[in-house]
Amino acid sequence: MSTPRIPSGTAKTLGPVNWVICKVIARGAGVPNPHLFTTLGRTGGLFRAWLFYSGHLMPGGKISRKESELVILRVAHLRESAYEMDHHIRLGRRAGIDRDLLESIKIGPDAPGLATRYRTILTAVDELVATKTLTDATWTELTMQFDERRLIEFVLLVTQYDGLATTLGTLRVERDFTER
Image (cartoon, rainbow, N blue to C red; front, side, top):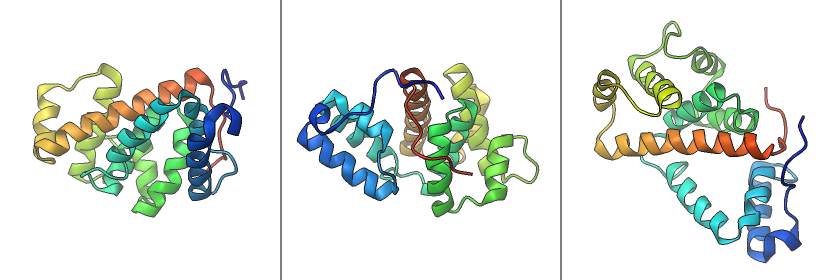
């Protein structure tokens, strides 16, 4: 494990509002220190704005929780983001992603027996992460799965977790636990 480039914040470095928010998140996640949040919490109001935005994508988005977790787990796998995988394997399990589906997510859109809808979603995630855009063919397939609002949300969800993987990796945020 690499040493974090910016250590997790404390009550003093986070300030009272962000400290309380991080304590609530820790309790909900069942971890003593949610390192992502206590690191990003050092940004003051930007942290709270990011939480608001992130929370509107997941869990507050219009895409189902199960499909949101499918997207996030694929991004985490592609980006080799252990922190995201740790948390979203647990969250995905609660949303209905069993071991078999998790293995299919890791394999990707070519996984045998994958439903057409999931295959389309995984194909789109792979393209967005790899190329930062979608081919017309993939976009057309995706329009058969989502309405306009969810299409926009899908792109925002993928890019949010891709960017988060970049942040976690660059800052070398310490993992909270290891999920299997």
